[in-house]
Amino acid sequence: MQTTISALPISLTQGAVEQLRNIMESQNIPDEHGLRIGVKGGGCSGFSYQLGFDAKTDQDDEFEIGGLRVFMQKAHAIYLLGMEIDWVDGLNNRGFSFNNPNATSTCGCGTSFSA
Image (cartoon, rainbow, N blue to C red; front, side, top):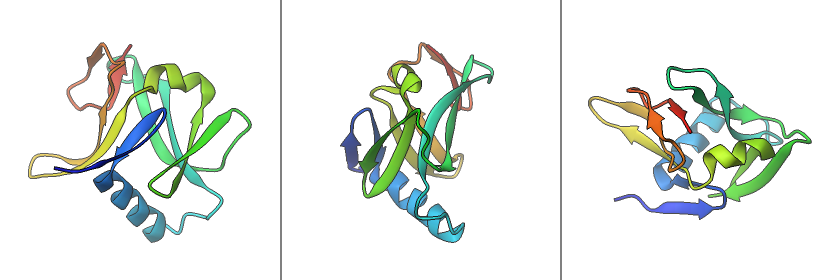
């Protein structure tokens, strides 16, 4: 069982933090960039998750999880509060998974949701 590193408004499992650090290192992400977590319209259920590295903007809240700088637009918080992001590395699935308590339904692949 993995431990979860928590900070409001979302949490990342230790496995997710380790994978994100590996990605930052392998892709030479600049130090001033952080992990951007957000939503955008689209996907088969209405919203899609955004997860990537980016520079901070004026619309962002910033917090730290497991030593990672995390950016999220203030307006996205209502869709993401309480969400946990995990890294899954199994036979049938490999990638980030999103456990969002605000989602009223999700698609089969788990990357889009409705709220």
